[in-house]
Length: 192
Image 1 (cartoon, helix red, strand yellow):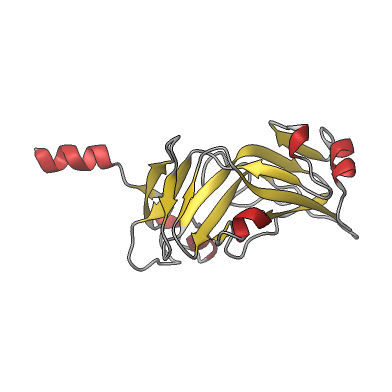
Image 2 (cartoon, rainbow, N blue to C red):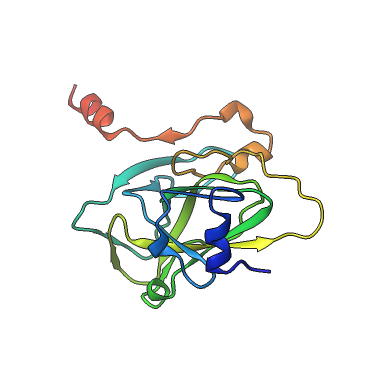
């Protein structure tokens, strides 16, 4: 069973945390979440599931940024969420879907007990200009029947955009560092 907007409102502060919470973002059976002002893009031509992959960080300026087809952009919500005893799920908003923007590739379901910012796997079918702070997706909550073992794994309490950590599942923890490209350092090295 999916919770109604009124039921979401009644559980805010108990089973559901959305920070910051804006009542105007409640829908009949969901709550809109907004886009933070940063994105990550992978730098590798071929991504390797057994290794951390290099990426770079992009800032979405106030005047917007054009996303290009054929590129995966990792973003995150501006809102921190926590869910107890419910299964959270995010979906794109129909207004953005009608413009060809996918906000998650295959990962709409969260786990009961997830706490953190939601990483978005954004992909577009044609160029589209996006802006920081736009309502990018909606979160819904499903009730669970049966015993719940709450989520406590690699993405729990995420405070930033989370690139894939699939390599951890494959036992490749010796490579357990993300490789964020620091372009200022690269430029300084190239100049010297």
